[in-house]
Amino acid sequence: MGKIVKPKTHELPRSIDRVSFVYLDQTSINVDGGSIIAWRQGVKLALPVSSVICLILGPGATITHDAIKLIGGAGTTIVWMGSDQSRFYAAGRALSTSSRMLEAQAKVVCDKRKRLACAKKMYGKRFPGVDASSKTTMDSLRGMEGARMRVLYQQESERTGVPWSRRLSLFDDIDLYSDQDAGTVVNRSLTIGNQILYAVLLGILNAVNMSPALGVIHCGRGDAFVFDLADLYKAEITIPVAFDVAGTGVNQDKWSEIDRLTRVRVREKIKNCGLLKRVIADLKDLFLGEGEEVIEGLPADELIWIDENGGLWDKDGVLPLNVNYSVIELD
Image (cartoon, rainbow, N blue to C red):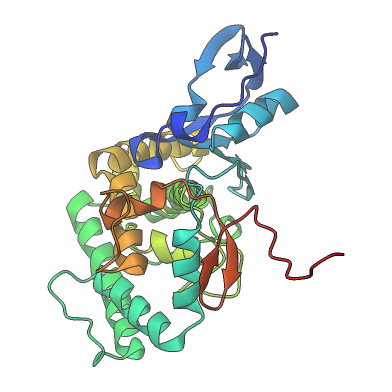
């Protein structure tokens, strides 16, 4: 086995330049010649993990310690996903060595006025042409969102000719063997598509050093902010995909085919809508705001990728590292 070389941060592709996700199941993943290799039924496939935001491992996938070490060093997020779409996350090092975005996120979440303004701004991104200003209450925005989702589901049902009754988000509530209600296929595809979207968004948050737990609208769980972000894009990505998958006429008992079609179409949607660049732009808009300083001639939208050496906190600013601040004089 070749030597595993840890890549330098500046040598890694940024999140906006990567593939959204790769899904593998029934596969053995190892390192060969310094590269990640996936083996399945005698077929060997080289994986360019440093060009992937998120690697999703399905049932039957096995991975070695050396492979995990190399993938983590590339800043790629790994998600183990069960057949019931339960998830286990793991994250490598962040692609950005700056804490700028995390500090901005913490400032917003810990200040009620800033958090309220950010929440309204996030809701506003869901309603093009609608002014979600400070005069709009959160209650009214939640009501607007509920009405928007009902209309959206109905529109997708009419577009595809797929019947729709209600959203069932847990697989325990979905009887794949009951009747031929295509809405059941929609529900399964929605859940699968959303899990993939969550995984990709987590990969982006890891890349820019933001916390998935510090939600603005959602709260109280470790992936609250992932849910916040996902709600900005579901109407464009996972909901249309779910109705399209159901519209193919796939049988309800062919759950593996529903899963496969959903993964393929979600990836296509993510690529076609430029999701990775959009998420980064939205995060900057929500948390950096306007008027950010320029460093070394770079505008604010590039600051999150700056390698910062860090320092020591002081009430009057940041002090440099590697300095002895002792004022005690020794004889």
